[in-house]
Length: 135
Image (cartoon, rainbow, N blue to C red; front, side, top):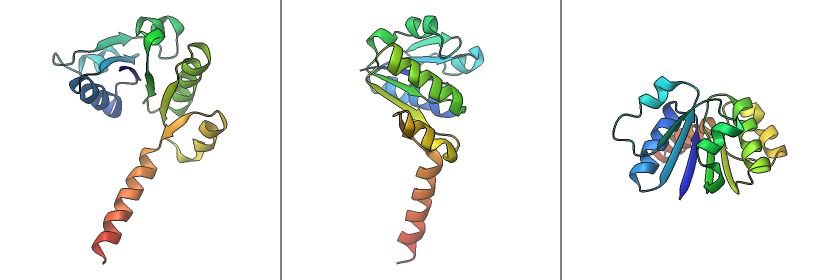
């Protein structure tokens, strides 16, 4: 699969490396060149420096052939914007965005953007472990 990951922080960087190592074609976009360089020489994907929602940058990243776009930045407004551009302008069928502020989840839902909420997931895992140990 061809996957574009927007944001190369801890989540985006880790995901980029893992998906690339699993044999997927990965393109990662970030406006900070140092984050892209942090992927190291073992990363086989494409690194694109630029404004994440800019059409020219998305085209350079290969959005016309993307099976997935994952918006993994730490900025909800940026994740929403790039998700909408991918869905509406470039017709990417599978878009997943990271929700950073749980109170903004309803905005993503209203815009019909599929999400992953790390805070919610971590809370669930911790509660599961607590409940698992209490039995």
